[in-house]
Picture 1: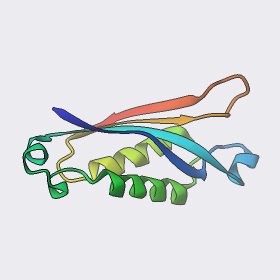
Picture 2 (picture 1 turned 90 degrees about the horizontal axis):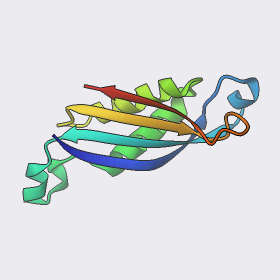
Picture 3 (picture 1 turned 180 degrees about the vertical axis):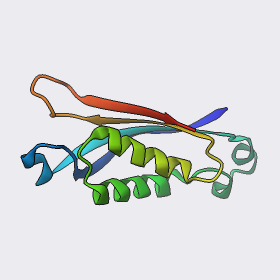
Length: 115
């Protein structure tokens, strides 16, 4: 199956379980792989024949900003739901990274794969 990727999508949102994290936005970085057939879009060169990744990025940002998740696992689930809502997407693979969660740790990440 073909793959359309969004890499390094920055999302500012409330994320975390600690009291101070519930009061300030942090940045998540999201990578998403949309498994779908890209032949028609490749042939027609028409946005209507593929997933509109600009619109998808906006939906993911809006969903996570509204959700105020405590866990990056939840953020990954919500992002995957948005990916699967795109017409023609058979499977979504999503990775959510959060930097600065633990001193000395580059980032924490959660990955989900959903049909």
